[in-house]
Image (tube, rainbow, N blue to C red; front, side, top):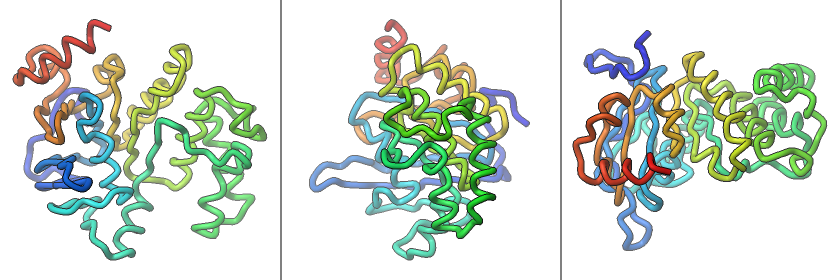
Length: 257
């Protein structure tokens, strides 16, 4: 296994995600411009950049929450097309965690976790509940199982959201600014869970401005601006010697706060 910061360059590397010349428009707005990104199995990629740079749109395209108009996206050997079977296959392998939790408010924490496996995969309810409790233990909130989202702190809700994504046994986890809606004291409890997940070998693409987390777990840093991937490099190189003036400006602003 590679150490954090070591980038796999061998052509034989097992790539689980590939984006090739991906373009997307919202009307006349060109939100993704010839995006190319390869993620190896088990790799942790941290994506940063200013608001509106296309970061969230890029990862939402990976599991077809947004549709790209040009280019190729391949996830675990399946190309993302309009074929619903391809979309369902990719979504079954890709978990996503949003910044606003997206939990069902009328369901308890454990019900939020078991809904997908029971309804979509026809898993026996008692089996799903046993797995759900194990995952709530894993994210350190088993005592919150019977509470509703409105009774939980933001950090607890986000950990329920992470556990819910893990219930589907994904091969890849996407995180869209998972701590940006949290109070400062709750950020670390979510990041700690994500660090553990990274250390266990989960393939992850994380959009975040938490640079301490990025330095700790990232194999690859990606900087986006105006719909383009401006720079990508291992974290040591990215932070110590960024090549692009746009990257340097962004880091100078974010690292002083």
